[in-house]
Image (cartoon, rainbow, N blue to C red):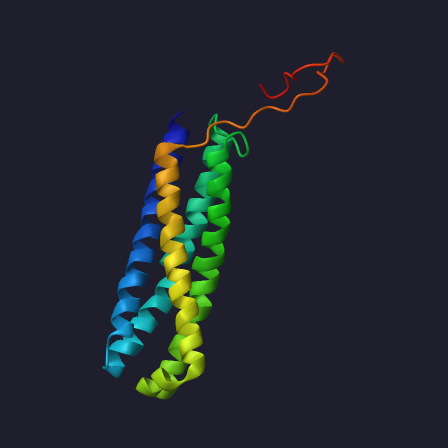
Length: 178
């Protein structure tokens, strides 16, 4: 019981850091998109790149590990409830977008703005990268917010057990895992 509570507390903290990181990315992206100051442009992308390699990576990995622990240590399990399965899918999306996508998109932005300064704003590859980064930020923010909402409301309920022969050979509902 105590181990489950500590795991839950750590999971909530790490998930909060994930959501906060997504909010910071959104704010820095708005600042980068609306500036005419080369220093601000470079600073926004550099800050996002540092965050992508540190707190975003650590919080995503940590929240994933603690989420797995909570599935193992509680009655929720991995596949017993539809809402957990949806959260698992959103977690995979967050891993792809956060520690992986954000890191490479911000690295590309840092490289371009360091080399070209404000001239990067005229570079078509910068616009493609910026669009990918914006798409990633929006999807990341929405998926993390959705995971919070799903955790609170727990929609869709429990999966129905499969019918089939029971362990004693009789037809009907199996009692395995019930």
